[in-house]
Length: 145
Image (cartoon, rainbow, N blue to C red; front, side):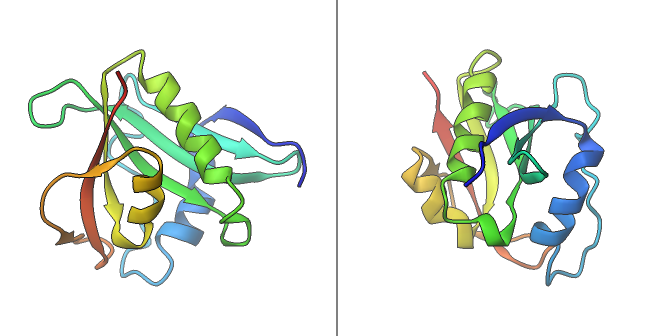
């Protein structure tokens, strides 16, 4: 595997992977998030020397009245999944978010729950079907301190 680097990217640079991975086989084709341009929001990607192979968006957003950072739009190219790239991106984002708040939360697809549980997240509440994707989700959280 080529050398991987975690890089800051613009919201628009997340769109192709959001479309390919997160909007595949869903009723929605919308790849822009309402938080993409909010103050404090940052977007990270993993670059393999030739292209972006994974992306994520992190935005300060309270969870249950507690300061927190919400993880959104985490996506890795299907051909690159299972190689630890998502873990690299997740840990880089958590390290950066720890400066902002002691808690990370996300609305994770049930198909990704095991990945997040392996990386210190816990399930927070009952499952639900996301309106934009039609896919089952759970809220997950991870304490950073």
